Length: 117
Length: 111
Image 1 (cartoon, rainbow over the protein chains, first blue to last red):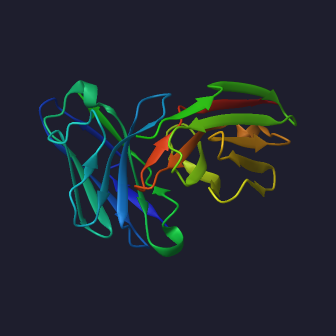
Image 2 (image 1 turned 180 degrees about the horizontal axis):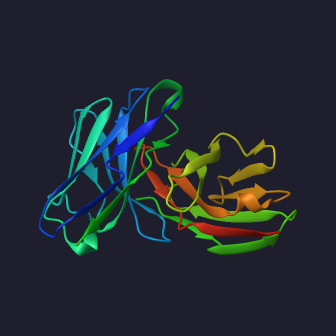
């Protein structure tokens, strides 16, 4: 149990376009979802926390107008990278935590590799 | 916000030896401390965790200790095996349910 999926797994886009990444909890209700960014050989950097039905809380230094996060249901959150630039190229990972016994743990998606050319 | 520091950044040990990774955190209200193992290009996998009301937890070859007063926690891997080679991250969860990660430790177990 506690499976989180992400789509797409890899996307290549041209500079200036927008890309949407989906994060789904497949077998539990995710009250909170997190979006991370990871550069090669570096740690996971928390970008934002989203609770279902609420606006996302962004970490300091993360542009909320550039990284649009929507958590419309208890099983789906989306991250849209708007007007992507090469420096946005990175590995984006979502995670989800649920209720009850799953409120402490977070379950990671497989990640999405974004390459902006 | 929370600040998590992790040491060492790289660690090489001989197969069969023990490995210890240490983390410190800044927010005394943080209440949950997981450790993750991440292989290249893959998602982090939870290997062990500890809550703030516990001082030590063990699962086979892996153990975690927590010192709330000093705000540090450590991962101990005994009898290391080559398949333990990976990057390990510690994390701290604050009362806002946000997780902050350490900078990672690249562990290499030499056969």
